[in-house]
Image (cartoon, rainbow, N blue to C red; front, top):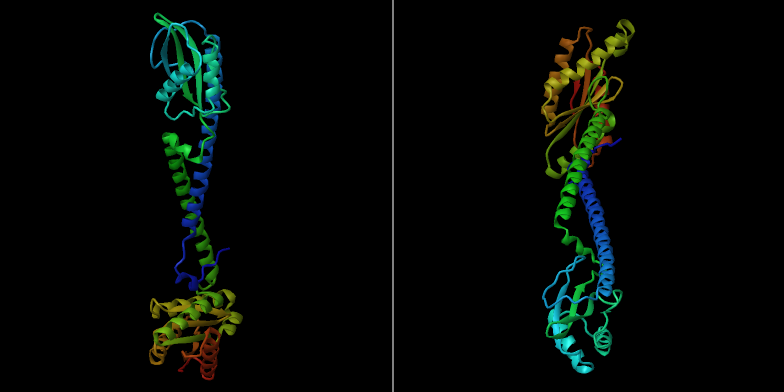
Length: 363
């Protein structure tokens, strides 16, 4: 169970719901981007398969296609052009220079060095068969195919890109899917924020209930001591007064023996109710145990604390149907005090008031 300390409540920390929602956002984005990357890999594999089909089609097709430019093949976008080579295809360096120049014109980024062998074989054969640069070697593929033109022999030059293994930035090529990933991730982060906040609120409510005495509604001893410890540090740091009062019922045991424990419980509840009615909003009351209570009076001097205690004592004595009374001891903060020390001193003052009962013992 989460226990929210008052000490922690004054320390600026990043709320868990913010950290949790950011973590969910980060994980969701990573998963979405990874999925997009695998989609890019799948598209690359599909393109590789299309290139293989294209190569097979181009190798098998031997009919003249006539003079044309920028032909689109059915498998993928490919830059295609036909260059006229005159009567019979000339062999040797002249042919290679013509074709290399045309390839460079069609695709300036094409690496001609590994393609020189393909161009040489095509020229040496007199352009009688198709030459295709192996797909596995290049990111841009070159295909050379002989064609018969009205004015002589020509060569169909086809170049097309082969997608390399994509880098993570390839996800930018899928703007719609990337936008969907971001929106879904933000939605998950928002849901996580709401869930964590609701869960923390529930835990906080449970913690508050755990800090409250179930019978009287006063703070439990541990919670009161923690609040008192913090108030002491603040009072010392700001040189402001602070008092603690310890209240103890004078005749709870006779009430329990005569009228039953239920009536005794009602008497305890009445004391807390009356004390709260005469305390300020900044004051706290806690149950130390049994019929003993402590009141934290921040900013109150000894004189003011005595006046408040007298008001509570008189109001309780007049309101209790069983004739119950209360003895109250008061002490003021000292520079070397901690919660345990100041409560013990107030307790000693309460025992001094017990000598006469129904009394207030000043500091």
